[in-house]
Image 1 (cartoon, rainbow, N blue to C red):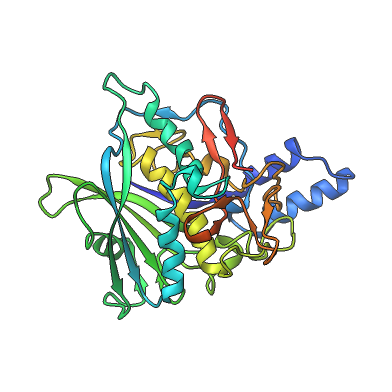
Image 2: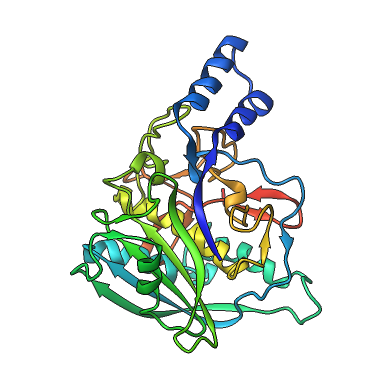
Length: 332
């Protein structure tokens, strides 16, 4: 089972325009909506404001990740040490205590994901999940070439641990991946270990700085579709990597709550809404198409963010679907 961080169909945007938002007059409304509808076949998930599902995300009787899970980072292509540090610090921020960093924090965001582990989803006792830092594998010689398909992504993911692990493949800006930019910005799925006895979860995210920043790095770059607004200042001064963190965070939330395609989701398997993708494009209160919401601003850099992390990092993280209220929950 593979879950793509997909582009939305345009009729969703048309529905949002006609139902949820008011324009100064009907002519403006139709022009904006029809322009988007006729401009492209799809839209990146994190560029649209997604109305939360009418009913809670449903549990589909499959296992969730539990116990201590290693997160192994597999860097494919050309990444600077400073870029790797941004992503590593994000993972190191997941379990920092509130006293160790300012609020709102990455760890507070992660606790919202962990709430799904306290739901009485089955007859079994509630499970727990603890992510720990694993290996970092560098492949800066492009051992599989600069053009990858899904099979090669799985091959790369298999280089990490194959038991109790999430293997994260990150491809650099000069690497093309099937479907990247034209239909997705990342993927999460699972694969069998070499022994075929266990399965491991994996995530792939691409750096879109060169290929499609207007799709996969929004709101740090001008969007290519829909309402236009000024791009935000990236909190770590790297449009591609800060965009990767947004997509990575969404996929990590989906992996935790739907690791093998039969956990929490709504809709058809494989094209479903998950705990983060159900709240697409929402980063702060007051979000609407083309506007990510009211966010915090760094006084020195003027960068926008909603979460504090390790080593004084700041990140922009997606809203998460709250199972108890059926609403999208933001940090700010």
